[in-house]
Image (cartoon, rainbow, N blue to C red; front, side, top):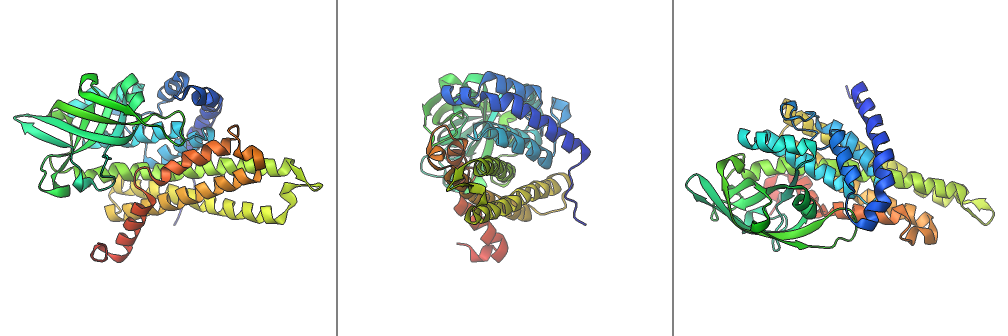
Length: 397
């Protein structure tokens, strides 16, 4: 039988996260937008609340939180930050530190994970290259074995949190080739720590997400021991998708949370703004549009939590196949990011000229949420996954 209830502990966590988001995150949004960086108070607060590295085991200071519980916090953060900047930090740091917690060497976990939980290090993801987006098998970054160590060289682009990782220390779950002839079977994951003399950084400017840094970097002659491998040599392609799927499911819930906050703001405007002698909320055309958006976003939110639940079922209990997880996550991300953008756009439209102004939170949200239709796999990739798992691999080119 289906159970749509959160546990008592999860509901308490939601209230705690909501209060933190209201008292710390929401009040810092103007400062974040003017300075174009996440304020120290927010970052320190996330660490104090144990919201960084939530999924890391208690052995290293984490909460050992499941994916659904992580989604609850993500939703509350998204409602408080319409720019989607802080949600990006939250989802990236949690999804990819989890992958290290699961597949990293003991030496790496002992050195890195307590720092992540304390906010002393950030874990990012570096997979995209200038000429290869989601085509991991064609990338050119490589690691060459030299005895018990590896020398890494390559280039990554459109990477989140580059400035944050540089300033606060940390590194990237990085995809490289260890066998250039084997395609996806020659892919290995490394934790690539940031070293100033080994990295050439380039800042890129985003359409939105004012507080989140974004950029590209080249890394040259980085020497790493075996302890920095995540999983096994040439086994990275299979496990990197576990990180992507966690991040995609969080994006679905974040997008729904942001859109539902936009509906709240838009509804309040409709109830207070008058035209032709009546409140806008009394016009049936706007009521129907509102109803459609509420229905869509309730469905999208539910699909996001279903995706997180499915992820937990596979990761923690091995009750569901990886392929089923891939499909459920792809459905949730495709639906939520598409409908959220349309919903926020409608809420902006209801607010007339104010909606088009830089003072309107829905203007910030529209640009921020648009990024999630591309991040961690585009809408087109989500459709490929859904079609593949519905038709079978033999029908996909």
